[in-house]
Length: 326
Image 1 (cartoon, one colour):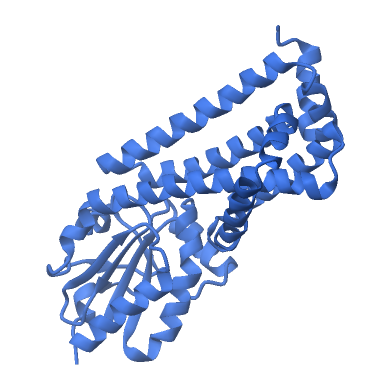
Image 2 (image 1 turned 90 degrees about the horizontal axis):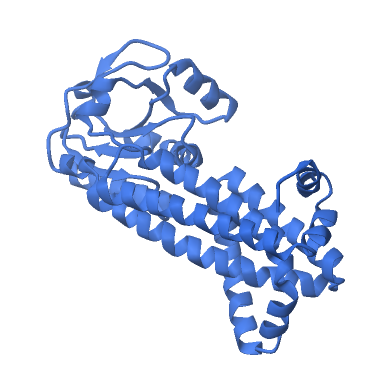
């Protein structure tokens, strides 16, 4: 089928009038399936790219993972739009399998809290938008009752969430095994000059014997970094009176951008101007990277990415450092 002006106008309905798009695409099975396979191929390509970057420890992994989240959201949105093609026969088959249906529903709603609290805001809004579009489309295309439309879509959410969760877990494990920052642990921290957004520069060694230092390498374009900052700020407040200093080292091209972001987001952390020398000394190849330097000036912990239960992990590592320095 040629992609003429009429076809283009029809697909614009996906944005302007999604219910009409659902109804019209049902009449063109071949076009629908072609788009469906295109979305599947796109997701597989992005997943493979991210997995390879994670396994090989390439510097682009942090950006790739962010793109992967966006790609998964886009694929889910496109799949929901095309879901009307097979919703009725699929729903009929699964509807007769009570055990399978209950299994996926339990999985969907068990994962819901994790999705709500862990997903980046943009990805979360994309998932919500996808869900709403699919429910509207099912009702308009097939006349499903609202409860049945939500039930069917919950099954697909469960499948997508489980597959995305397994893939993300594997990628994060690959990242943890292959980044060189862990080589810093139990070594003396590099002699680093730190320049705050405000105030005079100082040497990291100036804090030796006085404070445990947390260095968080981040950037405003890094979604996991942004989601991690409030937790770091909370930990900084909690340990402020226990001689713990948390420094947010910006990797933005212009440190003013990072300063404005911290102010707008109301993140109370000491901002540090990142430099190529700092990245080299602390072996920064992906963001976020967090390094803890104990009072003896040794690297006690280094981690790439945002750990699960981030607050608890940071507390445990800081408590360990503080107990050893008594």
